[in-house]
Image 1 (cartoon, rainbow, N blue to C red):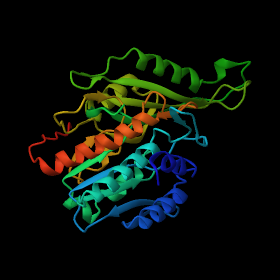
Image 2: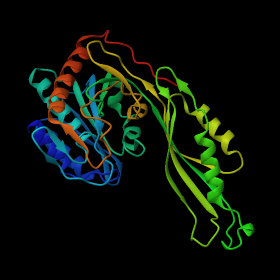
Image 3: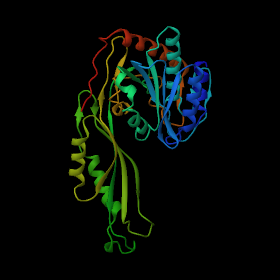
Image 4: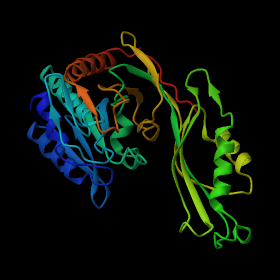
Length: 343
C-alpha cells in the first residue's frame, strides 16, 4: 500500500487510548498480507501489542504506539498535508516505518522487527507489558518513532504525573467560618508550587510543571469539603528531588497520589543526522530491555494532540529515507555510538 494511502487507512481506524483492538487487528492483517510473522501480545481484554518479524532474531526494531488522544478526527488531505488524529502522532510514523521496512526487505535486509504498542498516551501500558518479551534480549537497537521533525533526538525529558488532594469541612456558604474550604487550601498549595524552583539540567533544560485539571466542591452554596489537582511535571532529573520539593511545599495541607513516572533518558547519537533534545516523554523509558534506544519521526509535536494535527507529505517521504539510512548504518556500523540512560 502506498505511503499516503497507508497513513490514511490507519487513521481511519479510531484508536484512542484503551480502544486499540481494531487498529491492532488491522495492522496484523496488513502485515501478514505482506509476509510478516505477526504476534498479538495481549495487554488487556481489548488491547494487544503488535509484534512483527521476518526472522527469529531481529537485531533492530522499529517501534511506535497505535493509540491516539481523543477525540477521533477522520483523515483529510490536500496537496501538501494529511490532516486528522494520528497524522503525526503516530500513525503517519507507523506508515513510514512499514514502508521503510518493506524497502529494506526488498534490498535483502531482514534483520528487523516492527513493534507497535498500546496506551502510550496514558501510562505506556503496552511498553511495560512487552519489555520482558523473549525477543527483547536479542534486540541491539530500538528506533522509536515520535514527531521529532525528522531530527534524531539525543535526549527526552521524563514525565511525572500526580494528583494533589486536599480535604476540608462542608458548611453552608452563608457561614463560611463553620467550614474549611478544600479548594482554598488547594489554591494556596498550587500558588506555592508555581513559586517553587525545581531542578535544572544543562543537557535537558528546565523542569516544567503543568497544572492540567482542577476539580472540587459539591455546590455553589456549600463550602467545599474536597478538591484535587492533576499535574504533569516534565522531569530533567530523577523523580526523587522533585517529589521531595513537592512534599516540602505541601507539608500537612494535602497528599500526593502518584499516577505514573518516566525518567529522562539520553539516547543514541549517530553521526550524519540532525540532532536535538526533545521535551516530551515516550515509551522508551519502559523498554530498557530492547537494546540501545533512538528516537526519530516525521511531524511536529507542536501540532500533535490539537484539532489541527497534520503531517507534511514531504516529511513522510523524508522519514522513510531517514529510517532506511539509519537502519543500514546501525546494522553495518558497530561504532555508531553509545546510549546512556540518565537516572
